[in-house]
Length: 520
Image 1 (tube, rainbow, N blue to C red):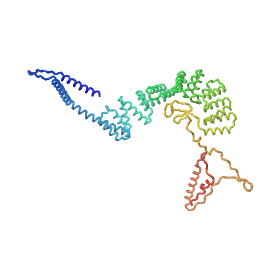
Image 2: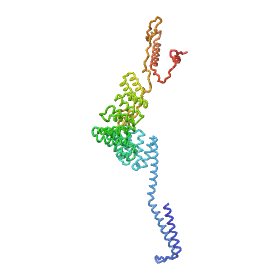
Image 3: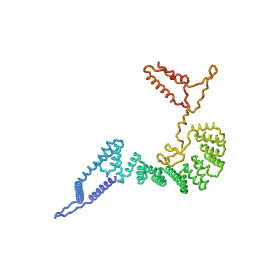
Image 4: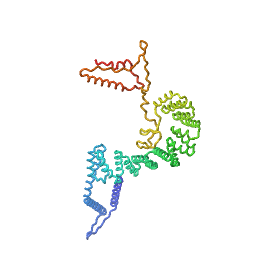
């Protein structure tokens, strides 16, 4: 648009110039080699413009002829490059679709048309084709060659990382991930693998720096970064409890500030504060965490914050926790435990039963069994409560990747993932869902009196003696024995019915009995 306006302005200026000359008539006299040339001013101006235009045209023709070899070669070079990029594009699509043969064909075609130094994607397509063909060793060599090129270094590290993961070599995979994270901390795969390595060897400071780098590059959200920092600081505080209590307290308080509802951080922070005789501050930390999410570890530390307190004082502190979080099973359980220690069996029983009504689980029945044994000593009721505890859902615990732990840990022992442990009820057991009839007592069968008043003893049927086989009877006996064994196995392997099984009427059972089976 600007060029068009400039062109129109030049044409307009030329038109104004010629109009100005036409309005002012005059003559031009030129003497050259003894001759005099006299023309009007307008003709002279037109001649000058024509000469300039002719010179420009001649110069353009000479320049075009001079540059024609380069222009022709550039045309063929651009055409060759376009064909190469088309082959490269087709090869990348084939590699993504899993067509190894077409990917290899297009790789060779693109390598002939385009220099691999000018287009690094050819190296990537070559490595992908090798992977599709199953040549993993060749692919690793190509990825290693990429490490020498700064532009392809991260791509080579990524390929070597994936190959190490495929082979199960976690050390090599973490090595490549660490090199990539040092160059580009914004890479999620490199940062996560490096974070797992740092946490596995207990380098909490290095892990904290990496999380801070992730946060600065906006790789993770602010809330997720604060959660990770809280977990890492809690793990650091646990590691420094005995060696450096002051550093452990600082880390634990920061973790509690970042995640006030995180029970392990609150417990370690309150414990470190209470160890330094600041019970009031430690109690406030535990109370805030209890309001957010009750946890038995919080109740245990809160009720025993003062070692010299009497059992009634601990009961009062447990009741204070219950006031902070009413209508919660953990609150009732905490009061029930403290009441049992204080020999207040009525309060302990009432709170334990309330906990069962709010959350039926194994620990509540076990606590109620302890209360029953301590108060009455009735072993029948104790066994009844223990049987209910076996069938009740399990208590919440720290669970990560199928591993159940009594204590919290910062990483999973299976995958090494950070913050994998969650406080929840483990998977239900099969015995909790199905009550087997084998647990029920079998009633004894009394001896029936005979007609003459004498008792008749009931004895198991003795195996009847088989008649001697006739000619070729060994095969018939073997077949009968095999049939009898199969029938016995079938009857013995019958599973007990479920609790809600309506059963079968005696008449239908008699009709389905194998003794009534008739072939004709």
